[in-house]
Length: 597
Image (cartoon, rainbow, N blue to C red; front, side, top):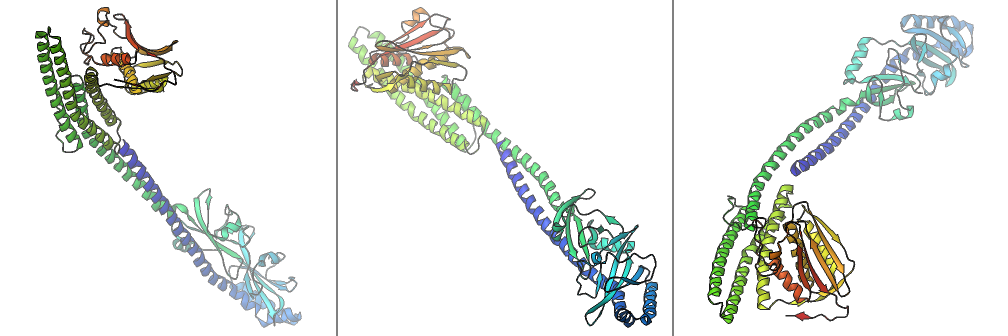
């Protein structure tokens, strides 16, 4: 699952970053393309403007027209009007020619119903007045679109008047198709006035672009209701009051990016599935071996040493399995040897019970043997613990809930075995008089709280309830008092049903403090209570025969409490739970530290 999630994050991040880069590059290409089209069409139509303006320029230069406007002599009127009528007949798109004086008053019109030149100032603005001929702004008259071609009649830079030709806007379908081929990719071309208040597609008026006119001066994006997002660029046409606007759908340029995104999504899905499958296979390969190790470790902890781990691997797990099998074999051999020697020593003691000195010597030898065996057992156990920790650290690079739980359980079993061996060593030390009490001043409530927190990490099936007693300063061996509390609490958890509560109480009296641990377990018969704190004594009945232990925990606890001049005891009834307790004398803060051997 972790591999799939990490691979998914990498694929999604790479795909999205790549898509953004491709999209931005495509839009930059689109900007260049639309701008280039607008510039090219502006240049092309500049040439068309020149052709449209040529007749008006010719008329403005005719001597008859110039003489008529300069002198106001009627003798020039007939040649001038005849000339205008002649031009009117030559141009099929011409809807009338006006001759105006310098004050823009109409002197002659080729048609009586021709529109007057009252809006001449609007039609000319803001065209350059230095040009002799200007193509003015579009206007709508009835159902047609017109534009004026205005020629300035001058004499030695003196303005005499104007020749104004009204042209109707008519474009053939063939021309429109040619422009469409030039634009390509669903592009559209519009013409409009330089004030932005009129636009046409050369056939009919169209709605204005949905952005302020000032934004059209540069490359811009907007959306039309019928065409979606558009990329647009506008350019002016020289010697006219016209603007050309090019629109191309943004989807044309974004299509490669969308194709890339869809393909990468498919590829990413395949990679995630393959990565998840590979991770599952790898995890399964590891968990099988760890499951075998966990089962074997639990069996060894319960005293069963005939279950070797069958793992054919050459990695760390294989080495761990080999070491585990060797350790199990050594423990089994040591146990058998220990049982044999204990049996032999027992027989020797039974035959020499009348000789007290010989009995003490035998006990001493037995304790020395237990000490030697315990020391020997610690060597393979230390190696196993190191290998378990190494495997756990390896798993940090490939976290897995099952693997982590398996290694944690294996670690717990190793700790249990270490506790049993340390117990034997402590028994040997007590019997030989080598155990020491290193006193220090500490808060008993803090110690109890720490033991409960540590127990809660493994005893998840029980509810541990603590009734604190506040700050209680005792002058004792902190480490050994901690082991006493730990032993009593672990016994309460071990011998009580899952889900049952365990109560820990701490009560302060005048000169001592009493710590008690109460469970809701199987209880202890009266005849067994007097021997519970003896060395190697275990209660044997139908409830306890399947629970592991050697009967040394309560013995060690009792010895530690007694060496602190305290008391230890039990209150129990068969089937009604048990309450184990111990007391410690309260010591003044000024008491010096002592060591009792």
